[in-house]
Length: 417
Image (tube, rainbow, N blue to C red; front, side, top):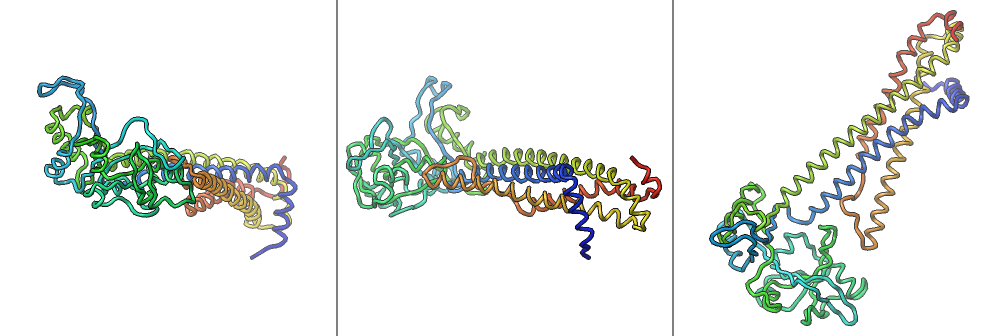
């Protein structure tokens, strides 16, 4: 039942003791504010890391060539490994767990992509059409490379979104136009976007792998392989098989990690998740510590409130007030202050997170990207539950001294300092 007189007395007491009210409220506000901010930032870090793997296939391997560090099969250490087209068939036939094998080659060195009077230092990658799916490239305009382009060695290209904007701007249509790649003209058939690797993949252009080999003098040369595997397969076993097969093919020791690089997206994603699980635990520990500090602060303030009101309690009891009415008045004031402060702290924390997200959106709208930090957000249920726990804990912390004061005889309460 709403008691107007009691609420008027509570508001009068709060106005009379502004500093005490502020300290009580600030302890609650800061505890909720920091918890929301920490949890939201932790989620932002995790969302940013997961976005790096969102488009790329998690069931994929990347295999790149290196330089031997040990002698093997009559060859001295320091030999450069060179992949060939024969490796494509070897991987497909000898490792049944692999579902797709996609080679890629790159034109290395300083060269310029040209369109009219505009230049770009973007690199050109020759690749199989399925490589686009494995590395997470999505169609933005036109079409992606297909197997007909590969079979017929067509001089066509798909531009990364950033490269397209450099050469053609944001408004001009690039589809059907011709660009100069190292002195040879290629027709633009599409534009792709890819947010992995911080969006830097969008600075590249794709051409068919066969066209790359025959046009740029890279016959029978492969720089890197993208492989996909059965999601249920053991990634470590596949890694070992890849090393054994390629070691036999190119005559180096399977244990020579410098001769052959193998990276599993699935294993890398697991490592990232482990790191952010640790960060989440750390954030919760800090957040709970902040909440505990807020609860202790509320408890101390309530003890002061009870002590200050000892005489007032004696007068009330002398006039016939019941112990319940005395305790409820004190707790009602405390719950009102802590609830209001907790709600403001919740809104302030959520507001800061919203400003962070707005800033990230502004950066990305201008073509930039905030790597490993994306959509800092907070689970509303967790935040509200924390606020309720803090309010209840703060009220209970003052309940014991309030009950003790309510049991004091009126004459003793009136004599208290």
